Length: 477
Image (cartoon, rainbow, N blue to C red; front, side, top):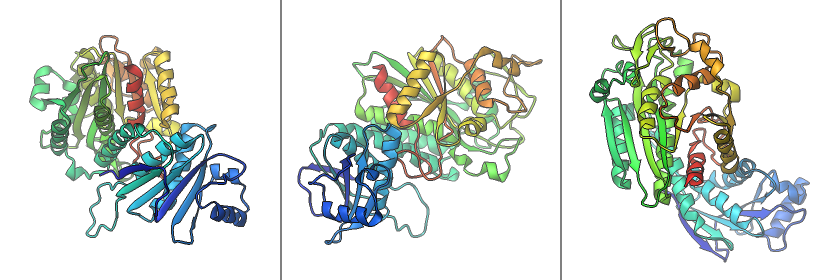
């Protein structure tokens, strides 16, 4: 539940106050609690403009906890987000019921949007199973300043999408099996008016979707499915397909992960959660674009029925795949899902997946990687990342890489045993299953979990991709 927002021009009585000022060498004369701020800066031997790097806080005489920061409009979105998040945390750490945000000057609108969005995504409670949960959600935000109120409707929708993504991702694997996940999705579809279609295991076998079935067949309960959701807008001129990897738990299969690498593998469905978050935000914003959301929901279990090394399976598009490593299951379930999605001939297709360890090795957890079918599309994706604060780095996928996937017994190897450049090879593999020359972006979510938070989000699981995805949708209509 997101806190209620009220916009006013008069500073009310409050217990927690965030003051965001435009960057300046001097303090504005009308800054809230300006005398106290001047005292704090003097005590710390800080110059006023240093507030653009390090927020400060202090208790006013009436007991109000006040935090101050300066927004530098010369900084990029990510840097501005980090500053606002740090300032907010000085207040939100006390778990207030009410928060007041005061903005002024040339950066007032920008500051207000960052602060309100940051307060929404960092104050809502994510799932936790403790006998005594002492967390307190933020209930009310009062925004003080001369701002355009219309912007906050879209931001509320975006915050709802981010929170949905994070909530699903952190949910324990016994509470989000493929069957339970599909029930959640059905409720979301009903609540938001999305059309829903499920490709269950019997249906996928009949279709010949052997790549997906190979992974899902290892589970004792056959509750895996490819779920197709549709959002339509009467004024839409573009059709976009979102594809999400939804591996609810990844053991690695017969190539079993050690404990260190199996920990948090319930988060391997993050790509599907990001896709759902984008769909929710776009629906609530009523974006004039048609969206088809395809979710590859399964688990990668070890069992007598599980697929194994050297198996040869036939994918939906007729491609025979030689299995090299059972822990490369993500590209298998995505292969058939991408084929289904591209056969609908969308104007753009974007898939999201926590796909490869090599992307995390290449970028760490502060960027995610992106691959595109054209240089122009790659640049668009990177530029949108800069604007949204969810940063992407574009990688090559030149044809000569694919020689590493040549198989003597099938059309293509699933991966290599060495794992060198696996993020690139995985993309070359997936490209085999994209039909109709569909413009396509593949996002490898190496930053889905970042210790200490990332950008505007303070929690490790940060919902990366939702804000970027919505911004991409706004660019296509």
